[in-house]
Length: 566
Image (cartoon, rainbow, N blue to C red; front, side, top):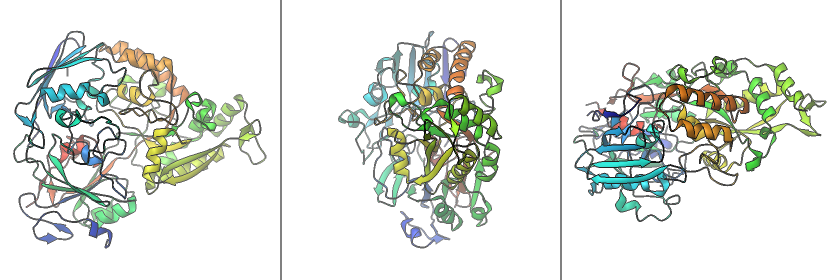
């Protein structure tokens, strides 16, 4: 994709266990075989686990933190699909092409003609213009000056600064909304949207506390797509249960960690692929000025913990060697190597350095007590580290971190919580340390990581403890650094690589020192899918999309490529 001056991109069209098992109800006819309903013409129900736990609550609002996975791609779509596994041009979904003006402040978008929403209403450029102007997509500081539909298939977006660096956010990360529905929604944050109207290949059929069912959208733009007519998203409360369901042939698609894949592939139905893409880190509620409490608010404690961690052991024991090494700059290597300004920051330390951890703490005024743990002014360093109950790889990593920290004189108590408690605590800042994931960028540029995860109050990416993080942003650490914010905002307005690298060097210097998120690994991203009953999955030879079932946007794109066997 050309990155300088005026450009036009013309995009390709989309190619054409007993009690629990009772919850995996088939939604269509056909004879059964080995635990699945099967029949011709897409009658075989595809059964998916994307991470939901019981009870499922109907919420298909793309702005809600508790939105169900099926909304993100299968029901709602952005204009274009960006394949995060490769540096390649995006593919048109609703959109057909786009063009920047000379200074990058105006984006002219053409959408496909004769589109319809799932309720049969026309989908036109007016809906797209409405979407970009809508409050949920246009927070203070977004820079949008106007969004205008100049005809039924043309939208002109005008910004107050160049938008080259925000290409994915604008064109691949904004869910297009039907104006005739959302113009009537007064409170977009609390709207449950239980009967969503979207542009994607699926619509909601039913929702229970144990699963929800999507069926083919009869008004979808590509005739005959999807070939899989019914998809059932189930709730599973832990990895082991999902693993048992895969092995029993009762589950067809899941993105999860399984240390012994042979246990589920032996049935002859399930195959798997590993595509490490997203960082696994320790979230730290780092900023006392915004209300964080705990020893982790001291940068010296974060720095000491960073060098006390034995990542090689965590990689081997918790993730059975399936993860990648992580850069403290959050750049994905080797894809983003050119954006790492200092070679010393290519990879975080892999071995623990207990002596260095002690030196950092002692220089900051901490001393050891009789039990060998550090503290200051009679107050010991003691922090709680949480992970989601049932996420066995993260739970094992947390246990190893507590042991490694103790060797360095840092006391950490590991505990597990349910998904909802995890989600609520990171949203509101009611935590000290969390083993969690970061969402890697869908393009070969770490800008979005910087804006969304370490951008501060001025960048619109965080807020005080007790307040939810702004919609579409992820700075759960409450990190707020004016130097970083200034560099992020400057980077968004340039398409000159040398200038951007200088700005990234500034950001990287600050975050490598401050460690608002302590790097662990590039997470093993295992995807398990049924290749006996369905074809069209991403493979190592044709990695056309990021394959896990929980992948936002990509999951909907993959569903459009699947076909039932027979």
